[in-house]
Image 1 (cartoon, rainbow over the protein chains, first blue to last red):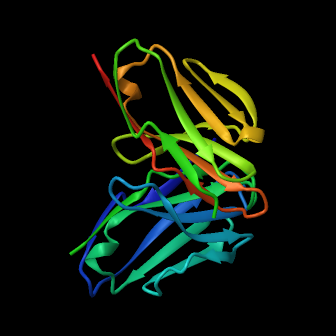
Image 2: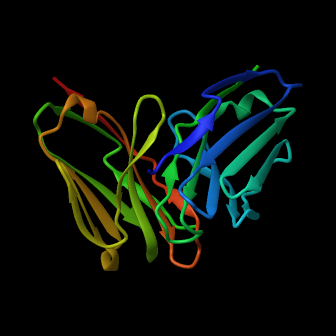
Image 3: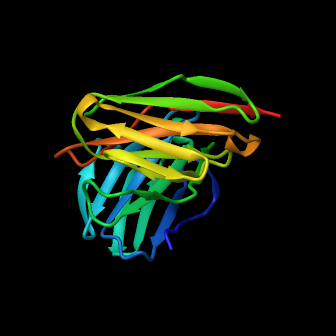
Length: 113
Length: 109
């Protein structure tokens, strides 16, 4: 089973709202990732967790706050977002960090109004 | 980070035709993946191929790591092959996956 699940599928939020995106995998992978994809662009890495510790933060604004409560679960907490943050947010996992095949979830399509 | 370039950017094919998509990368890699992104945004893994050749049904891929390119072959294309094909590479020692800008494939009946 190579499934990564993400909830919700769609999210519409106002600029003053607080919401969270959730990602789950049960493949025993020890690395998990958040990517952001704008329309007609490739995915771009935001965060990497390795063994539940934040390894990479690609200069992402603090209104995005990642959390890895356990080895299967990854959250992305959203607060005071801007309309330009509207995008497809993709979660991925791999067996370990560095050189291993990454598997992606179906994504959450976020619209900020 | 590593530079990843894909060509062509757009491709229109008649159903049943064959095609070759190319991915050039700027440094040595320890991960090279091909993905198909469907209209709903799901990235579907096609190949994990940092070197060598692999085949899966009508699709095959070859990576020549020493010359820093990878090719994805699609034979007997079907309308369901339509979508965006991404190549993504991870530079040896750098550990982050960088995506090319993609090839948008449209297969017409």
